Image (cartoon, rainbow, N blue to C red; front, side):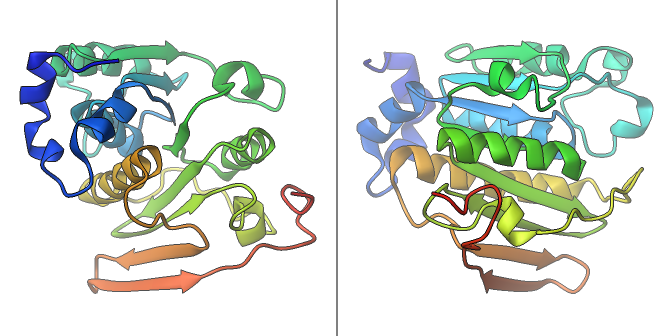
Length: 245
């Protein structure tokens, strides 16, 4: 698949990145990325995936925008309150970059529906706000050997890692017990924006083959103290999800 003159101009600044070039852009154009959750993380990750030129973006979210979403979910404007998040995001993203295709799934991911909703894709990006769904998606990605870029945020801090099935630990290796679910997570809008940008960098690296993804490493950033830490992690040979890989 070739790049049009408008694409060459649109992406010209990233085409000049060392090792990226036209071939890297073609890989993005030919790729499919599923973003699960169109909240603080998902709004920004999907926007920057669209900006990067990922050819097919699938947005999964059953929710509607509310006024309290607006401090962080920047694809929602005042007039969009009450509308389905995925539909609003699709309209904005395709207007922002008409060179890409955006699909929506307005449905909740469950053990029964995950195969149909996600299926096969190049990368899954974590925009979720609950651990139950994250572990369902993690299990599916491990089973289908799909890279899964996880991020979780709260207040002014968060973490990010890339799950590469068979090469590094999966989410269940890292969290053998379910973390507590928190309703109405306190959050500064810039926090998910920052981690969503990192998720897109990881996703672009995975698709193009550039750089070293955060496989077997988790990056923690505390914005309150501006402290950064990277923790190395190993696979659990007895993990019920990926131990047999």
